[in-house]
Image (cartoon, rainbow, N blue to C red):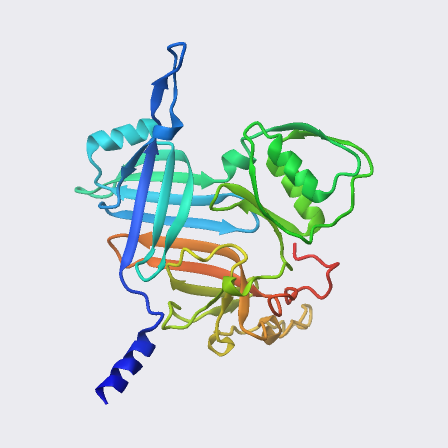
Length: 345
């Protein structure tokens, strides 16, 4: 009897998350002398300041409308000398977080764009850092090259990446990009984001910087591998009740670094909180609204279109919030799209 009870308890606890884990680093540049005696940057020996032991509050925001990821990080009561060096020399931050039970990894690595110091009360001081990911790669970079007649979207992506002032690695690129070739040569003279965006608009795709620092380009109807689908229940991390809205299904969970753009999340449709439809009794409005149940995926699988990671290393906040849209199966189209010719934009 005891063995049965222990086995039952083990099964009930399977998938539960225990033991928060995190590491937060702020980087300063290192320097060296070159052959001519000039002081130059030594990127291989940049200094990493570990502030994990202090109270840190962070939030990252990413959605398909922009290739950039925004992060705000607040570090409390830092040593004055260390804080001063970060204010003058800090250039990058990295945040890792999750749970010890195999769910831990990188949440954000990006470039600092603003640092300032505030006083929260009579005792606590806070160093506030705003950082962006993807801006230096896509918007503060430049491409100067030409494309030959007959270039396809995939060769265009490679040409943009290879010929940027700071070359860009190419990660996952959709196999479903149009194969239509350029009828004539073309000159590229501008930022990578401009040309990636033009290409994506023509293919109903999106681009962003992945965790390895490479450009990723994917279409909304690309097939999603089975291992990229996360099944959420109150036992495995679901927080509160998913809520229907006009822009998708809002889902909140315990902090999960595995959740990225285009990740598929599976939940029970029966627990989604419905909302009252708006009706116009004057007769001047449109009461022919699409029933809410039509927006629900038949299998309860929702593709992530925006994701927000929030954490407080000394507080209760440790969550991931997403907005997901049903796509009628891993190989299907979004519920708002009836044919491949239609667009989600």
